[in-house]
Length: 621
Image (cartoon, rainbow, N blue to C red; front, side, top):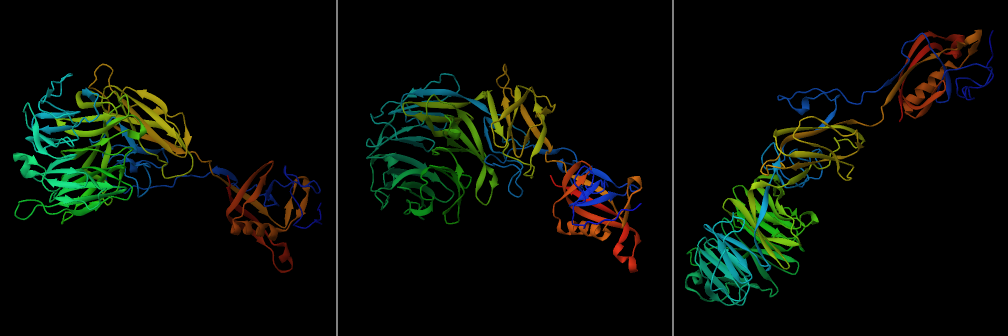
């Protein structure tokens, strides 16, 4: 029995559920609105997921994380932090450094391939005055307190012995400096007072109005507003201020900081929103200083507050943070990029390869203390940005600023000044901070799509204390996952999903042994893609001028039109509707293969061909 087809190929053959509307003839497949029969003799009919990770080969000499099978879980591994803080994104290609991180507090990052807790701090001097400053002369540590000048030879007792010098004036100390033996203090209109190391008294040395005093390159410098004085010869003999060595032509300009460089002495100051740094070199006959010459400057709006020369660099503290200056052959400075802080940087102290600097109101919190630079390691050499991180910190009862820092008895000692108080803190070598945090910086595995986190792996070097692991999803708040007592077992993430992750490690010291805490060697977050699984369908379409139907029916079809439909969809890569029984998908024809059994020609040419068309479809999610 045959049925004549009286409707065109543009008419609907397939209306869903595998049943055509005409004559009760059923077609199991429809692609792009065209109905097809299945070639049931073929075995290629399949649905399968598409592998999302390409195969990889490893040509590295050394075994490492790069050798891991890419079809296993993805890893972001952290195993050293010595290149410092300030990196917001951990895995930006060609931008991120694998040994940098975003931020830390209370964490020692300077030992390669480990992090641990920093030492705690302890208060060693407290006053109601707000001009506390420190200077070291040999084995003596001097502190200023209003007009008073005191010293101690041992900062370590809980209540150190402070000896107050006699002979001080009524005016408060505005500046203090030492050449290792002489200690000079400026008292504004009361001039400069001098004591020598270990002496019980101070006395008037140079009369006149002085707001700053400094020592470097074998010369003593004093300033008042825009006047700069060379007082070197007067320190020994005493007397009245000499004629100013240099008076800045801008009467509003004020000198406020000084530094000793390799070839020159530097003096800085500002007027309005403009800051300048001058260099002073020694005359060839050694009798005095040449006239100052501008050696560098800061961007408008950034005010200079402090300077320190160390290891051939000049460290510059500004209203916005820290900059590093490179000294040129003629003494001029090339000033590097800004390391931002929340408050002005007022002091520096260099020891070994490190420079500590005053870091006040850290991250806009009351925490105030020190940051640290590593002049041996630069996170950005071209921009002159050394590795840096926060260091010793304290949370005072009220807002305050770190005004001076020195090294005394092998530890950092720094002063804080608030509106109505001043405090001296020392580094406590016998106790670690109770806890410290380090945040990794954002990472997305180089893929903006959603990921499924699975485990955090940790590795420890030393026992003691505990470590809390926290996870942030898409820049949200950190959520604690678990607290470990130095166990290397993986921590589950609850299969948290996100485009971006950030991990925080909180190290906690031991509850009984306060000098013991965890030493973390490495950690890694294991994840996998969370994007929908891509599906591929391979379907064998039966093409032929006559299709046999169940129940003995046979039907003539447009075989050429069926093939052209597949070819057009493959060429255009236009999304089409694919129906299979009662189910349907939006697909793209990836490719096809026509297996011809019989080709009609001559007077039967219009009948086309008898074939199977293997079509590979990619499902559009």
